[in-house]
Length: 105
Image 1 (cartoon, one colour):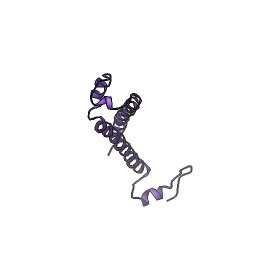
Image 2 (cartoon, helix red, strand yellow):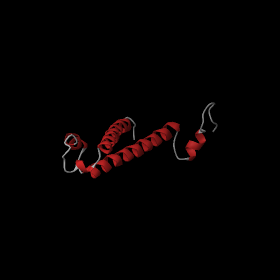
Image 3 (cartoon, helix red, strand yellow):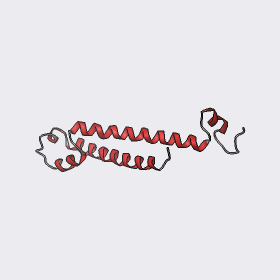
Image 4 (tube, one colour):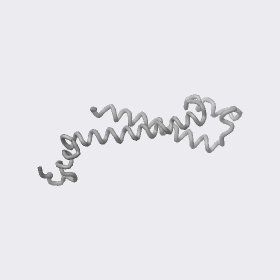
């Protein structure tokens, strides 16, 4: 087998790795990357849920109360930064999960 002109990875290498073709290789690798990203961002969500002892929805409803017994332990800028990171993590899990559903197993 020979590589096509302009192909950065010869198809023979893809076969040697156990894949039928470049499309199969790409599909499996993209699924793997998406799963890694989902796991990472889910771990960030889990971290914030554990840190604050609540879901983000509860956090959003309670953060406005300066006398909240749990949230008053944390500084304003810390809560703001965590809120942005937490929201981003939720968004990325949602996006990458939707992307993953588009790729056949």
